[in-house]
Each structure stands twice: as C-alpha cells, then as structure tokens.
Amino acid sequence: MAVQVIGMIGVARPSDDATVHVIEGGVSANYLVEFSQAHDQAGFDLVLVGYTSTSADGWAVATHAAAHTEQLGYLIAHRPGFVSPTLAARKAATFDQLSGGRFALHIIAGASDKDQRRDGDFLTKAERYDRAGEYIDIMRRTWTETKPFDVDGVHYSMQDVRSDVRPFQQPSPPIFFGGSSAEALEMGAQRCDVYAVFAEPLADTAARFDGFRKLTAAHGRQARFSMSVRPILGATEGEAWDKAHAILGAIESTGSSSAGSITSGRQAYDQSGERMLAHAANSDVHDERLWLKIAAATGAPGNTSCLVGTPEQVADALLEYYKLGGLDYILMRGFDPLNDAREFGNELIPRLKAGALELDELAAATAPGLIG
Image (tube, rainbow, N blue to C red):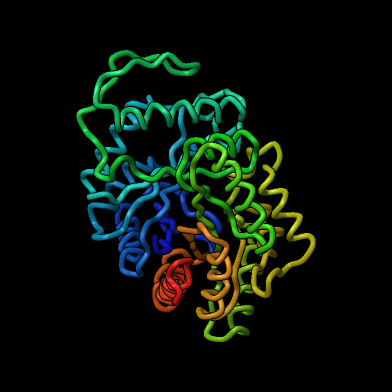
C-alpha cells in the first residue's frame, strides 16, 4: 500500500505559543471543524483523535469532524476496560459504515496508573495489556462471527453475543497499538495490525522494526508500522533551524510543555521514553536533521522527535525511514497545530507521497522474476 499520512486534531484552540499536546482545554465545535477541514484539504489520510481521562470523548469528536469532511479518516484512540468490547465493536462498525470506511482504532492500555485511576481502573499495566488482548479478540469476533457466541475469559464473560452491524472495511478496520514493554509487544504481535512508534535514529528504528518483525512472524503475521514525528520547516535550512530554536525558547520561557496531564502521572518513563532521553543525552541531532532537544527540555520524549529542514530535506529524511520497509503510515504534527497542518500540505506531504510511490515502483520493477 502507498504510504498514508496521519495528523492529529485538537478540540480547542491552544493558548501556548508552542503546543506539545492538542487534546486538552475543553472542546470547541467550530475549531474542531476548522482543524479537521485543514487536514482534509492538506492531503492527510487520517487524523489521530487522542485520549486522556480528562479530555473530550473521542468518538463524539470524530463523529462531528467526519460529518464536516470529505475524505479524511479518523484514528480513534481507545482504552479497553471502560465500555464492553461488544459495545465498542458495534460503535466502531457503526462509525465505519456511516463514514464509508474512514475509521481506524488505536488501542492504548494506558501508560499512567494515575490517569487510569481517574476513570476507576486500578489494574496493573501488565493486567491492562492482558485485558486489552482479550478485548481485541472479542471485538474481532463481534465483527466477523456469523453465529452467536459465548465468552468465558479472564476479564469478560458474555452469552449469546451477536451484532447486526458489520464494519464497512472487511474483515475489520485496522487496529494500531504502541508501547515497548514485553506485554505490549506480545499483545500487538498477536492481535494488532500496525505498530506505532516515535521517530528515533535510523539505526535504532531499523533494529526495532526487525525485532517486531520476528515477533509477528512467530504468530504467522506480517508487521506494519506507523512512525510519529514533528516536522519543523523553513524556506531554507537555516530558517528551519532558527524556527526550531525559537520554538524551544518559547517552550522553555513559559514552562509550557502542555504535557502535564499525561507525563505527571507516570511513575517512570516507559522503555521508549528512556531510550529517547538516552538518544537526546548522546546528541541533540542524529542523522543530520533528527532533533531531540525539545524531547530533553520538555520531559515529553515520546511526542517531540523533530525533523528540521526544508520540505525537500524533511521529505528525503522521512523516505530514509520508509526504505526500512513496512512503514505504511507516518504521523506528523507541528507546534503551531492548525497552521502547520496547512503548511505540511503545501510541499511536504506531496513530496513524501511522490517519493514513496517512486520507491515502490522501483522495488516492483527490480523484484525477482521481473528483470530481463
């Protein structure tokens, strides 16, 4: 499949000069429509609708946005455990049908015990991943089973389960997941379609991809990936770096990482966060333009991997990751969320998609059996 570009929509206009997170601050129907339409017009394929235990409901957010956009798909972040998996399956199938297949699901087991407990969930992280696996199994059965079935699991017991609504995308919409723990990787390798990671140095990303491929192969499955990055663009490389340092300065001067509700509840960084901070401590810049200074400054290592340069330079850098194979999705968002989404659509997204298509065509032309 051709590379697909994912953005992230916020629900209220941010007040900070440099916004790290976009899913806080109440909800504005008009801003949500403006933000979604900007992504639709810029050529994004999907947008992530995030989740915290204090933010607006993602299903309602995506439903409202989908009614005001034409092509844009919605990757809804969803935490298992707060609604029944059979109800979640019907909600997903309904949205998928009404939107004409513009739906994907991102399963999050919860990185923060504190954030989980706000909604009454006191399971350990390992228990949450075990529950998530059972949850996904039940969802998939609800989408695909043609006869009623019973469930007698560790976390769920159900009788005579059936659904009148099936997903538009057959046999099911794509399911994303993220995480670096053994529990997360095993759950995702068995049950999910796309492994979502943050941009790290190329060599480390290649190693992560290879490691996950081995896990999925053990279950007879094929690994697919999504990578999240924060492009910082300029008309020249110098302008891009000036802009990057201005963003860092704005964050440092206000102390506004805007990450408090997510990172303050973490008892410790997960392995991905620890790895990112280690990369940042080793060097501010990797592979010429992967910039990790904001990750180190904000203490939000997972959401602040930046690629700095002109649209052509950043597209070329992203294509180096694409060459690793299996990278079907790239999630990009900026620090001026609405305006950056529009800017990405001017040159960066077209260059990225054209370059990925060229690489795909070259690979097909040189595949064994097609030469001579």
